[in-house]
Length: 163
Image (cartoon, rainbow, N blue to C red):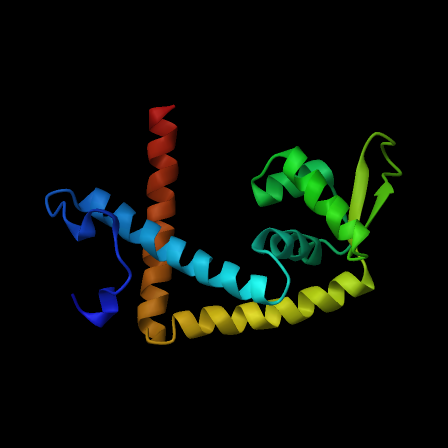
């Protein structure tokens, strides 16, 4: 096995007759390898990927988000988001306030301390990802990006047909 394929794939890349399954397994092994590396690096900084994801969502919405919108943005349950946000609030990284439009809802905003932590983590995260794909030239990265866009459209179409 060449060094380029040092990350083990499920079924060790067999299934030559099932290119769609081989593709899925290759994507899965790459995504899992990247996630594991990023999780390890966040952990070394006393953070988690989940915490970073919440801060990133709040960064994209400086006026704040309600818990439902935050859970939809992160593709997780309301309960998971509530726990993460409460921990961020206890750590002084986020502020939870009642919604002026609906007292049953809460609006979550990043604090200045949260902004400082997120900015440092985001810069490091960008560097980590750059390092992981550094051996791919820019053209190959762009081609892969476009191909994955095609895959997303194919998946959406397949899901619509299967519904």
